[in-house]
Image 1 (cartoon, protein in one colour):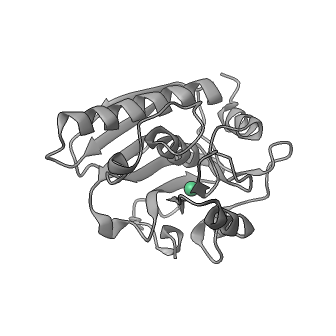
Image 2 (cartoon, helix red, strand yellow):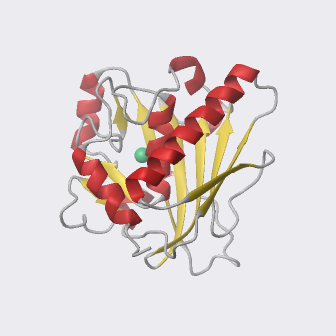
Length: 233
Ligand SMILES: [Zn+2]
């Protein structure tokens, strides 16, 4: 029922040695649905489950995907959005990205370099690309975002994040440390996948598969972000 069941785009010739996983967030407004998600946060038979390794010691219930960005250079985070957005919508897209990326920097200790690129761009090797799309067909059910993660052994090589522009009609931009549903929380969730985090079993975690009124960066989330960012830089 989730994006996780789809086969991610891959170029077999170029990325023969590269693995990919798709991880998604589905937003719901009622806690009971989030509770249902708790029983099986990753879904069953998904590529994400297949790619997920054992949870990292000390950071449970956040699940590490077993891969991280290596090296100390700033990770380029490019973004693009559909044509025809209003100034307010562009401000929401760019504001939430700036806040989530800054939050990610603080949480992981890593540097990120945010820049806009033309729509239709894919993530070149060594980058995270965030594509904002108004195409509802890309998203299943209540899904509002998903991430395709490419990695070679334990090293993430690139990540392609897709986020629904429909979010802008539903939520305020918000801040990283706010509680509740916000555009920034969704962006941070997907960027969490892009740096190697899977889903959390904590209902109020920003890395839970469903977001709710109490969603925030929990203390175990912080440990998870810290761990994937730890690279002796
Ligand atoms: Zn997710």
